[in-house]
Image (tube, rainbow, N blue to C red; front, side, top):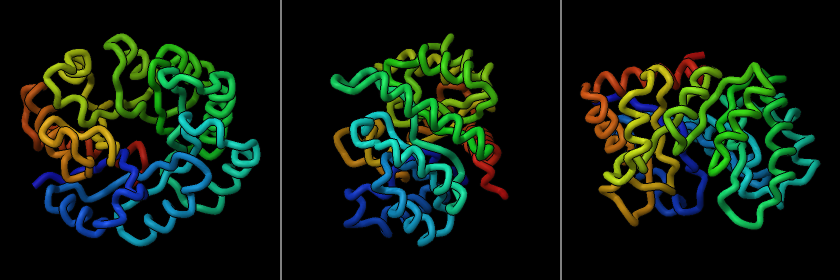
Length: 256
C-alpha cells in the first residue's frame, strides 16, 4: 500500500462536517496518511489549527487566498507574522494571484501576495501558491522577490512555465485534472518533468478526478491521480508514491 501525502486539501470545509472521521478513515485505507490544510482567509485560521491538533498527520498552512481579496484587511496582513510566531505551520498559504475571476482587484491581489511572500521569507517557510491565468506574473514576482521555495498548486501552465518554476526551486502540485483525457497540456508536463519537483494533491473538496466527476472530492481519491501519473511516466505507482512523498517531506519539513 502506498504512503501518500495530500499536499493540498481544504479539510476544514463545511462539506466534511457530516463525515469527517469517515473521510479520514477512507483516506488512510487508500494509503493517504498525511494532509496539508491551507487557509483561505483570516476567518478560518483557528478552525484549521483545531483540526490539525485533533488528528495526527494533519498540518496547517496559514495565509490569505486571492479569491477573498475583498475581505483581507490590512490588519490581517499585519497579524500574519505574529500568528506564525505563535502557531506552528508548514507553509504560508494559500496565497497568489487569480486573474480568471472577474471583479477581483488585481492591484490589491498583488499587494497582498507580495507581502505574504516577504512574510514567508522572514519565517523561512515555503509558500503554497494559487495561480490562475497569472502564471507569467506569478513567476516574475517569485523571481523578483527571490530566495523562495514552495509549490504552485493545481498546476495548469505550460511546459516552459513549469521549467521556469523548477529553475526557481519550486514544485508543482498535480491533482484531479490530470485524470481527464482532455487535459493534454498538463499531461505533457507531468510526463516529462523532473520527478523530484512533483507533488500530489486533491484540492478537496474541489477538483474531483474523472472517476468521481460531479462528486465532492476527498483525499482517498488521490489514488486515481497517483495511478494516472505513473501511467503517463511509464513507471510504477510505488516509484511515484515514494518520490512524491519524499518531496513533500523535504519541502514542508514533515519529518522534523
